[in-house]
Image 1 (spheres, rainbow, N blue to C red):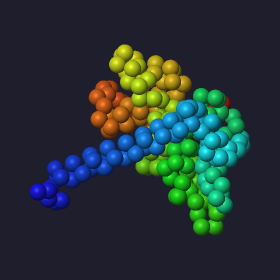
Image 2: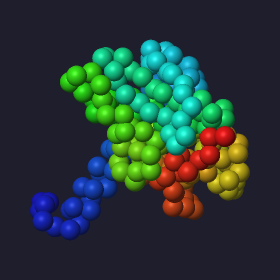
Image 3: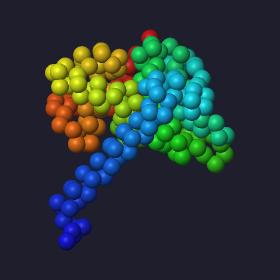
Image 4: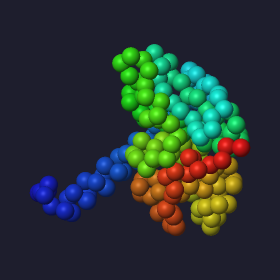
Length: 196
């Protein structure tokens, strides 16, 4: 019989919740890929009827909100194509995982909540994990990892920031895969990227 005051029981429950979260995020990203037959976040956003706007921001890469029932992503128009894919994938993660938190009763949500500012919180990590699953298939990641490719090489192959490779590896570990050498990631990596 499990006693909830038992430290081992609490550790087991935490591990189970982490596994459930990891599988949920993966399954939601993979469902989009299977439904729309693409890993291209632009095509998926279009298929989901998410309005995408562009603006020249000095210190912001992208934001997501729901305005009067319309899902909206605003992206920095100065980004490279590679960065555009990552930021759009991240913002799609907010749409899929956090839409209710981005919708307010008066129709305008707090833009700052879902901006690409440096946060170490759960919402930003989940959006990054979603993006990693959306842009990188498990099979491709595992094949490259088994071939001994390092994080920087894999990032170059997948056209993503090395931190997204680390997040993908950590998420696969949480899902039960035997992934070695997952370094610590920089939770602020998108904030620190130069869009020019």
